[in-house]
Amino acid sequence: MGALEKIAYLTGEYPRATDTFIQREVAELRAMGREVLTCSIRQTGPEHHVGPEQRAEAAKTFHVLKAAKSPIHLLKCHWRFLREDAGRYFSALRLAFSTNPGGVKNSLYQVFYFAEAAVLGAHLKDQGVVHLHNHIAKSSCSVAMLMSEMTGIPFSFTLHGPDIFFAPDHWRLDKKIEKASFVACISHFCRSQAMGFSESATWAKLHIVHCGVDPKKYEGAKPASGQKLLFVGRLAAVKGLPILLQSMVDVEGASLTVIGDGPDRGDLQAQTRDLGLADRVDFVGYKSQDDVAEALKNHDIFVLPSFAEGVPVVLMEAMATERPVITTQIAGIPELVENGVDGFLVPPGNTAALTEALKSLCADTKLQVKMGKSGRQKVTAGYTSKDEAAWLSKLFDGYISNDPPMDVRPGGTA
Image (tube, one colour):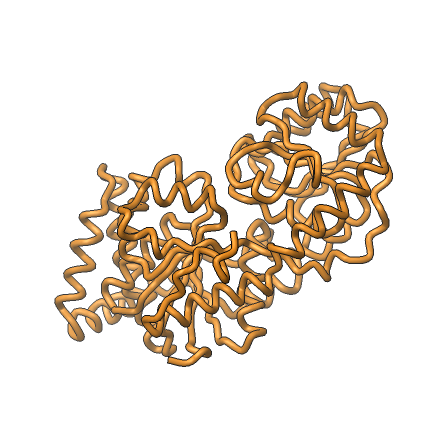
């Protein structure tokens, strides 16, 4: 097996404005000379195509559900694999039933996953794909696992969290780890959770592959020197924005730009008005990757007060821009942000601690500059999309050729 084996990527929705790191990973693999096909269970809406990159990716992505809606095509795909290897076909069917979390609705979903698996498998076989990689280990990963069982095409997946760790039994994380060639965990914290939900015999194939950014894209920003705050993320309760808005009341002179959208936007805007912050907080909706990079350069401090995260890529982007960050001391974030060095870590949901961190950093421009430089050094040393894609590519080649790396990280590094 050579270094340029054709692989495919699968997610539930691709491309999405909130998952640009997956698009960067695919782009880096392609830049290395590897052919990567992109597949998505569902088609993303136009609100996610916020730049030319997303529109181009959407146009060339294979959509499983769209193809499966043709009854004739669906039956042909299933007949193909039943005829080629009935043993594998029925093994996949048994796996679909044995991983059913129970209930009528979930049972129906398992039937859908099994149906979609044949459609995906036929597309991959026709395209000469030798390995499938999945991002987000939930429903799309269930399809990937069943496809692999049915067709013999191996699969791997990137495990992010945190939501899947709230329901690992429902998503049968144990079985997915068992069946996968390998698992790319985004942090030590993520890997430890995977170890807790799997047999020790599988731990050797749990590797750490950071999500990454291109530091060159964030060069040239003027040093931070003020009280212009920036938040980028989905407008949902888990991101902690109500806490940030409450803290803003006591941080005089600070302004906040909110990039993103989501189900809580209306409530958050109402809270902003109720707190008397309407002239200091600006909700601007989704923005393209380039727009976010420009916004980071034009703000002084990045704030992400989430209650649950993996390792947010937007934190890496802020740090690459030499912006100090204020975020919460949860999950894998402390592996990226060192408290008092790259920014401040505060307890999640603690308004007083967040307010104090905001006041301290807004009042000290020298500290802003110092933390910003430290943050960029951290990202360039261990979180670049190019280096992480090279490590992931090495894992692909190793597992495809049955000679996988034994290191958790490249060269045994932490």
